Image 1: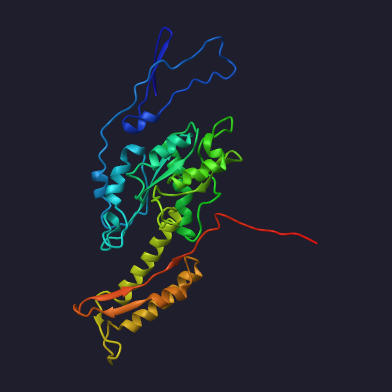
Image 2: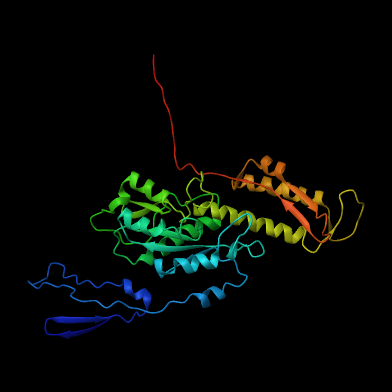
Amino acid sequence: MVAINAIGVVTLTSKWEGATSAELNAYIDTGSEAAGIVYAETDKVDGAGAVDLAASFSQFGDTWYTTCINSYGTAQLDAFEQFNGVPDPDNPTGRWVGEIFKPFVALFGSVLDDKDDLVAITDLAARVDQVTNVLCAAPKSLGLAFEAAANACTVYARIAQDTPHLDVNNKSYPDMPVPADGVIGDMSDYNNRDFLLKKGCSTVTLDKGAYKFQDFVTTYHPDGEVPLQYAYVRNLNLDGNIAFGYQILEEITVKDHVLVLDSQVTDANKSVKPKQWKAVLFSYFDDMAIRALIKDPEFSKDSLLVEINATNPDRFDTFFRYRRTGVARIESTDVEAGF
């Protein structure tokens, strides 16, 4: 920061330039030594710049980046959504396409505290069916919005890596400034948080001087879908873990192997039969259940279909379903007492 002093006027110029610098604010803290002088910001010129993420996205290549921080905020939500795409049983797009399948979530921060301002972001028609963007809330913080995204990423990334069956519920942001008066606006009320959640907006509370995760969700919230398949970031991480483990097994057991019928006798190296692959996947379902990534492994086993394609002898077809484990987000107890 460079300060230039004129009579009664101090002009501060940030060395931090570009679009992200627009969030910078300057404050003069005189403590108890104001000496009768009143300081006020009379004019501000925000940093600016044209943001083009195409070059950054081109660097993704074949690497699976699971979590990104969008430091440019709402102005770039469309760009992240277009690149990442959407899951669909018939026509997935972007990073969700089966030949790629390396989707990610993009975390962006917000210090807004009014529920209507927040849903104006997450409840737009363009956001409702999207599974990419995650609003990281820090209502009424004097910190930078993308600091909230960085705080959320710090907590989420470690849990997603080490204990993917868990969620970030009730974990605290490690280093996000909170309002001095302890008031965070609409999110302090449960009904408002419930409203925001249903509109695709993540929620927090303020507890012991820190923002605490309540719901960590993408903007995905189409009407009539119960439960929402792609709302909670934790559930997307489950799907990614299951897909990654499957890909490893497929690489080892199936890819570039000779396809042999179950009834055929062979001792050829690097060959695979449908029943052999099914046995591998049965064990995989059991392993995922032990790790609490899925429930009801028998359901997955019963759904499993493996066969050499009837018209293409070079194609090995596999199909199965799985049921994700849930998290106790609502605890309901009914008690009746009597004599």
